[in-house]
Length: 479
Image (cartoon, one colour):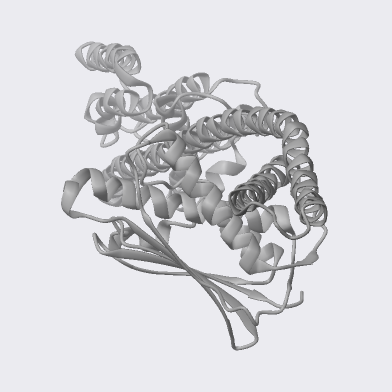
């Protein structure tokens, strides 16, 4: 309540340090409270027909009540309000000392208390100024008393005790109120400081988090740029390989046809007496060319997969054979790792449901999901092999089946597994268990978004630390 009243007398645009803010509130509060006591003395003096007290304290009441408004209107600074307040009250008290007994006046204690009030409100300088003023006032009263100057005591004897008690109690209450105001404002300032520190700490934490996110985003952009460049390079290489590969496939097929024709011509010309050795050689050539054709087509499918992977996603869904797509990326991921680490070998097991219907998906997006999951599986087995050595045999198994109206694809490895405490974090962006520089922490996060948000599917994981990890992808037949 007191703070709300004080806020009314504060300029809207008041600025200052915590100490200045606290001191200004102390001065305003004390001035307002003192105006109430001044009004009280006006009423008491009126009841005792003590007219000098009525006039002097009425003037003081008006001054100390109006001074906070001067601060609100910015006509006076809070320090000037403090000096004016103490000077007005000090003058009223000094006048009442002269009117009620001079050196023996019951209000004399107020004159002595003003250095304390000055120190409370204005600090050391105010305390020194009003200490000098109080000593000067006491010297004046002592000088008048020593010269036996006759001063009229306006207080009727019957009311002198009441007036003395009122003066004493009033002085104690005013000092108590000033002390309480000082304590209250100080506690309020401490709360404000604590709130500001807490807000600063929160803002610092937010800024640090923003900085971390910016750094991670920067890393992500660099990685994306690298991947884009790699995609362009892959597309260029694939296109270059495609041309000679087409020649190999075409000429091997044509060569097989030519050998078949040659065998028929030889049989006709030799009237069925063809040399067995010659027929055997031609058969071997046919078999070799068929193998060249088979592996050429295999290489052709890999090149097409590379081109498909490097191409930006169009976002268009189309029915695909998930078994063929999974098998293609399974081999691609394995041979990609083998290209980096010649010593790595793993047992590859496929268990595809041949009766699966085609699934409507975005091939490029699901291809990225599969490639990421396969790469993670091979990475886990590679890490475990480096830990356990010769006695460990890496194994990765991929299977598909139809379950509850959805195609379910499972990728299981016997690698390092995932610790229980971080299983719930694996889909979080930027979270990775790989060493710095080996992972961005975006693979599983993007895969999860592609499956769940892009295809209305599900992703799940079953794992046991240092034993196995099985990633499960469920996709609806039609979206």
